[in-house]
Length: 134
Image (cartoon, rainbow, N blue to C red; front, side, top):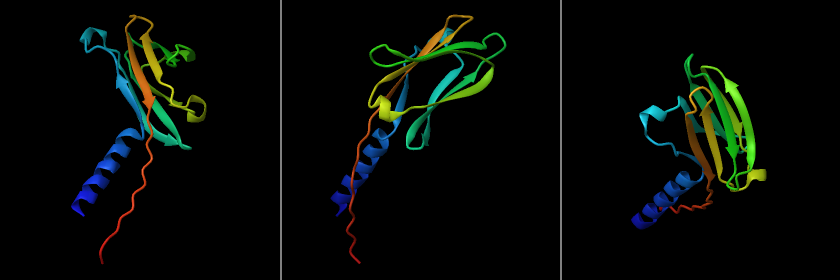
């Protein structure tokens, strides 16, 4: 019985780990090359993953370029934005994208500093059945 509970806990933990999109910061930890942006997984809307890009700029650093590419280098989205403190949300259509690996590159238009984030989706399905002695 204890072995089944451990297996079930491991299965649930692995599903929670791999069922959502992951965002990894691929920028160097160089303090001189840090942009005031953060990319994170914000949840699901209509069963599609929602990615939120948050900007915490300043008056000196308030112009950014956003480019989203797939693993083949095809540009899926490109835009210039301006502002100090704001966020931008991206709803990823998994029906069209499938398991594509996306790269978000954010570049400061004034300083040329940039940061890249890689988005990949992994999904596992698990069925669990509990038998409890009454």
